[in-house]
Picture 1 (tube, rainbow, N blue to C red):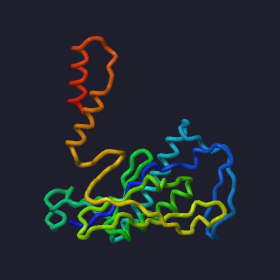
Picture 2: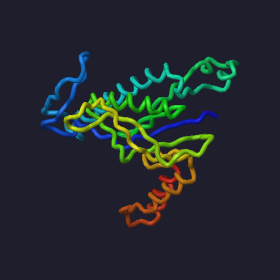
Picture 3: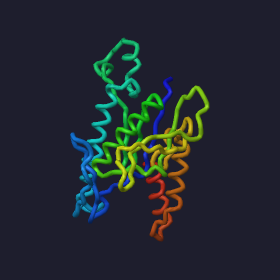
Picture 4: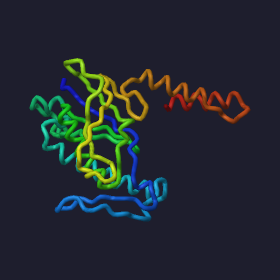
Length: 228
């Protein structure tokens, strides 16, 4: 199996949460323009905020997909029949490029090598900065699957520099903690059904149903558990 590097960029924050006097630096064909101050930016949590976030993240996702498709470090999913050049069904000819998975303001960026992951991360850092998004590096972690060697505890990932008066395209490195052979996304251990079950049971058992009828309480609990 391929060695797989991925990083969940947890808790991405948006500059659009500020309403007044938001400073932006624009990148043009002629270089970095002087910062401008924008007023009346969409308030985070307001009616337009989810729409703006959806449009922004979907544009970033398409951008990363286009970038990754031409990169040898891109993770490509295909059927076993396709991999041995022996297709049986029309769907066997399909290929899926896995560059990023997103949920709310969290995202996984995936690559076959660490150098590829650094490249994808920096590209997305530059892209999202233009649209007013920043990565919360203190909540970002890195994971590796099927590593032939014992990896270090931390590795450096690159980003733009978000310091007033400094060219944002100056590269800054962040030491990111790393773990091996596990998926943890949105505080959930992925591909671990036993842990999922115990977490769900704990949530359900600790939930207070406001009903005096014991039988009704049991029926509701059993239905919720079975559906979960």
